[in-house]
Image (cartoon, rainbow, N blue to C red; front, top):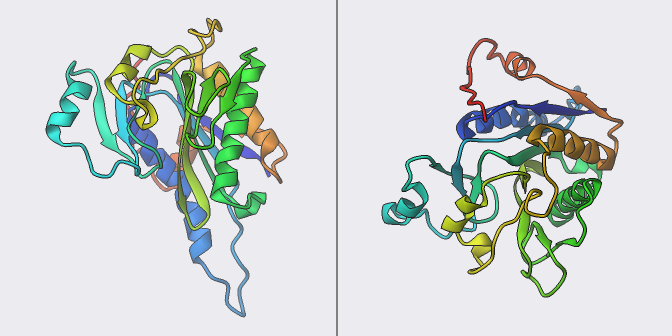
Length: 262
């Protein structure tokens, strides 16, 4: 079994990336729903897939928000007219996605890879992020159990600046959504939100930490390699294309995406 890695070049609209994720998720949920009878065998679980991309400036709201923001609350986020806003079924609160940030959605069955719990899965994603940062010489990065994601500088919970976020969705022990990692993103976009609901906390990035000149595509490849090496039962990483995913879902020639050059 291999991890299928689909990286989308350029900038991909958030809703299109979400649609591709739903196509990758569908076979996993179908396999879960087909209960074997006495005369049939259980359908095989599809291999895990990793979708990596970067979007135009986009704010998303996770399930931890008690209610959807009122229109007047969205005004500061969308004031420039350059960002969009979308609700999301992932965990977490409001966050930002945009150029220079790696967004990575891992679609997999926890039981297929012997992951014992959703909490253990979040820890796995954080470990993969830590290993990716270490590949680029970033030290002093740590996870915080109370506030999922990666932070710079050791210290009390929530101390330091946030370089990566984790927000997942679970359905029938199948995971979707995933992580974001700040590579060369414009950090000013984060000034419009409260990081993890913690007033006063700031975001950081590879570039701010002194790791410059790295592309999102390069970091995506390293992250895919780390994930493929950490999932039990996975023997390696194989590249997939958007056309293959659309074709397998019966949408060949449909869903053409608008790619904006970064």
